[in-house]
Length: 186
Image (cartoon, rainbow, N blue to C red; front, side):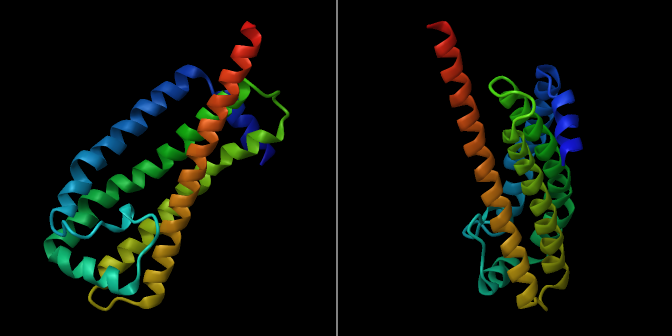
């Protein structure tokens, strides 16, 4: 863990964070503006699994996959999920580096606060596992298994929770930085 934190501290420059942020946002905006709407068009009343932060039931998963139809399921597999296998890695490294950069403006390099920079990595790992289970659900449909749906839903909730926790850390980090700047300017 210590080695990873030191690696992140070494590489968390403003330029690196900005370049990775632009790349991460390009993939994210592509999903938001193209792949998610394309898949969602087949089931406009039912949010896709990726957009269900509180999880989903077996009945919901079955209804979504049925409503998507063969073409929508294929589009999910061929368009949304490939992008969603790029995004979690970018999310993890970009936002871990951003937190380290931000913490470096307020805390000394030996502070334990840097361990919070691992939160985006956990969100990314949970996103990858969620994607694997989504592929399994789509591939096995209509022979969907309750245990597969429960596992997928659990990882969707974990991904969403750790993503939310990251944003709380980000806001707290910026608040601390602003407070420090105001104190230094007084």
